[in-house]
Image (cartoon, rainbow, N blue to C red; front, side):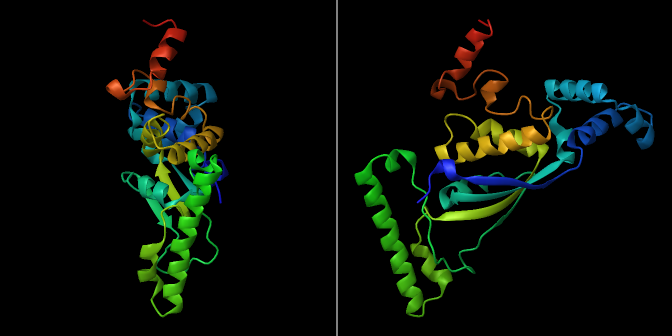
Length: 235
């Protein structure tokens, strides 16, 4: 059994010098200089100023020139199904239930169920029964690609994800929101923490939409953005 806190994520690779790359792309649009001259002129102070200006104006197209590749483990099929709905600027490679027979199942249990012993036992019992039926069908000659229809969505999965910088900002704006489902929100926050460590200027304002302005959720808003505005002295 695992819970959301046990999600494991690592950055496998990313664009070298992502902030310099984005700054160079942004500066190139308005400069007659060549590449070597531009790079020589981009001091750390100018990079910071360019990025703050570009992000402040919402010119996110230049972020498409960088990408991050993540290895994500310990998430359920529920969450990977939500994740792959993010399509533009994203690529995915997931552990296949068609070609890989599940042998030692790990089930992701939502926290509200995990904290209640009776509900947790019922949840895990049902998952194990479904998995047992899956194994029984395979032992009786049914191919795993057909037997997998019995596998519960709680089954742990692994996935490699590549997103460009613009796609990441959009992903974080939706999935770091308190209205996002708990597991994918936990995953998104861990991903955000990782990219902030690699490119703090590029992702300084990344996160739920309310980090940058009014909440777009209307009457479904959790109210966090209003409280934030009050703290900042905004009315």
